[in-house]
Image 1 (spheres, helix red, strand yellow):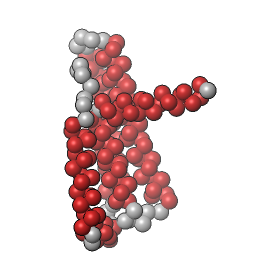
Image 2 (cartoon, rainbow, N blue to C red):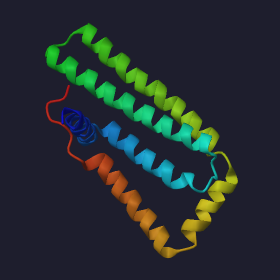
Image 3 (tube, rainbow, N blue to C red):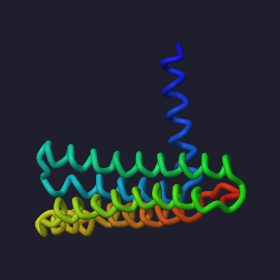
Image 4 (tube, helix red, strand yellow):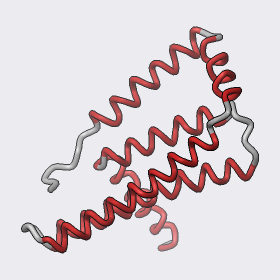
Length: 153
């Protein structure tokens, strides 16, 4: 039974990270939009695999960064240059990965025909356009308004 408890704890950690970290909410929303628009580009299995691996790597790095920050804040409540360097390095690792994920996205999503297909799909139906608009508003609200953790440094 402890095997399944491990999954429960992992999912709780993911949910906690999404609830408490604005950057994780941003990455979650970005991943959603990437997956929504990917269907218009006719990606191969390899390209979809790269896309999923990239999404997973960025989100995992954000979770590890959050873990490092939480641990550092627990270990040292005062200003400490070593703690700052550790937290900065973890945040830098996420930035490096996110930058190269964006480069991969530009490479994969550079086909104008895919964008034309997506535009035609959404503008071809008022309901689809409305749903995309509602999703966009909800996405911004999710990123910005979900309560942040109190007492962060």
